[in-house]
Structure formats: C-alpha cells, structure tokens
Length: 451
Image: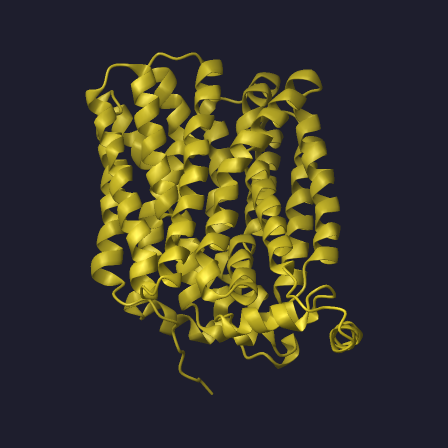
C-alpha cells in the first residue's frame, strides 16, 4: 500500500509524465526462468551416459528414469493450477523454483547411492522435479494475462514459450562442459544452487501489477484498458477466493477449451519428437556421429525460437490492424502447422544436410504455430486462470508420455523412421483440425457461479 501511495504522489508532483515499461522486465524474468526450467529437465539427457557407465544402468532402466518427470509433471498440473488460484502466482512460483532446484541438487548427492537403489533414488527425485515444476507454465500464462494487454499478449506468450528453444542453445553446451571438465554430479550441484538463488531473485522482481513498486499509473491504465484480466490485476486475498476445483467440469464441457487443449497435445507431439528422438534419428537413420548430432540438434531449436517470435508478432500485429482475436490467433497456428507437415518430406530426401534443413523448417513452422499459451491467456475464466492453464498444460504434456512410446514402437516394428515422421506430421494436421473445426470463436469463458 505504501508503494502505491508513493507512486501516486510522485505522479501528482509531475515527476513522471510517461508510462513505465515494467511489464517488459517481468517478461524478461519469465523468459530466463522458463529457459532455466527446461535446462533442469535436460540435466539427465546430458549426464545419462556418464551415470550409466558409473552405475552399470542399462538403457531400459534409464528410460524408466527419463519417464518419471513426464508422468508426475502431468499428474500434478491440476493441483498446481489450484495452488496458483488459491495463493497467487508470485509465492507459488517461487516455491516451485526453489523446490525443483532442491530436488535437482539432491540428484547429484544421490549419485553416491549404488546399484538398484541409485535407480530408485533417481526415479523418485526426477518425479519430484516434475511435481515441483507443475505450476510453472500455468503461472507464466497467469502473469502474462495480468501484465499484458490483448494486443501484446501474443508476443509475450511467444517469448516465454520460445525460451524452451533458447535453453537447448545456451544451457545444454554449458552443462556438457561442466560434465566433461568437472564431472556429472557437478551439473546437478551448479543447477540446483543457481535455482535456489533464482527463487529469491524472483521474489524481489515479481509482483502483481498494482503492487509493483516501480510501475506507475499510466502503465497500469494501459494494461487495464488494453484487456488485462482485472481479477488478476486487483485480486482478492487468497483466503477469500472460492474453491476452484469445483469448476473443473465446466472447463471440460466447454467445446472451445477442449479444442484448445487437444490442439496443444498435437502441437506438443512435434516438440517431444525433437526433444527425444530427433538426435537418435540423425545417428541411426542418417549416419551422423553423436557429437555431430548434438550440434545439429541446436539448428531446429534456433529455427523454432525464431518462428515462435514471428508467430507472436504476426498475431499481435493482426489485432492492431483490426482483425478479430479469433482470426489473429488462428492464422499463425494454422499456417505454422501446415509448414510443420513438411517433416514428412524427409522420407524422400537422401542428403543429411537437406534433411536437417527440412527439419529446421518444420520446427520453424511449429514455432510460428505455438500460440496455445496466448490463447489460454485470452480464454481462461478470470476466476480460475491457474486451473485452466494447468488443464491445458496437462493435455499438452501427455504428448511427452505418448510420443516417445509411439515412435519407439513404430521404429521397432518397421525398422525405420518413415512411419514415425508420418505420425509427427499427422499430429500437425490434428492441431489444424482442432482450431478450424472445434475451437470456433476464441473468447474469454464465463463460468457459472456454484454455491
């Protein structure tokens, strides 16, 4: 309250005549935290080979450990969204960062456990990381909805979502360097300690718009009049918020939201192909070395990052030029997914470099079409933005479970990746079907009051 009164006093004294731009510093923080989030998820992919050699863990056991994150991340989405709506984004997200970083740190300590106990310990800690990270993306969506007007929300959502690609480019080489020169345990120590410090920094930088010490009334007016979610902007205290879980059936019965949720599942199938099987495809189907495949894998990530920024820019630009929210959001999604279907062309190309170029183009398209989080910010009911975002993220990340399994089955049965690439391309078409024929008009959902 003191900050708000001081801010108003300075404005009345003529000390500020222009709006502040605090929302951009909020977005920068979201971008870095999200990149760090994905880096923590990738620690095992960087250290897995060394862990296998040290403890004699076979590939099947390592695969089980890999799967622990996704299973528990998906299962914890709805509870995580409920916590966001109950206690607010700032506090819940800070605890989330601190907890996932602590569990990451403990994975380095668990390296001193031997044999089967090591596998069980790694599995439990990877599962704990999944649970702890559950509120992160719904929290991102919630902050974007409260800090950004509608015609800036596409770009803002695209930027924090594109951090997943940036994580591959920045943190993967860094973690590999630490593992090579200092040892695999040190990767977990560095990432864990850094994350705990990051949680404290988060508490210093992140606030609701009307509570931020550096925002002025002109920026608040710009945010509010531009369509920021008012109940997030001027929310009641958590103790007075209603229970949100009872509204879950209303979300699941809404045709538009279901189309958005299933659309995210199809889009994330492309993401998880690149995160899991793409390097293996380069080695086994295209004859590249592991080192070369690791370097080449960054190219689609860069393309996806650039596509994500472009998709958000195009969507917001269309809104500013007078197109409806529905057309402005759907156009990049549909066009991007059409571009992503080009991945099937790799079945008809012999040159490895052409294959990489096609894959990068496909992932560029996926980036352009990855506007799901912007749509969530546009459509989530004001009272339960966290729950709606969590449900969306739960549907989307089921692809993290199914994609590796389906592709592995297809490769083992056919002896090639041809049908796997068709499967990935078909999922892009599935996303198009969802947005064109199921979603219909994109608008904010109004929930019915439940006594």
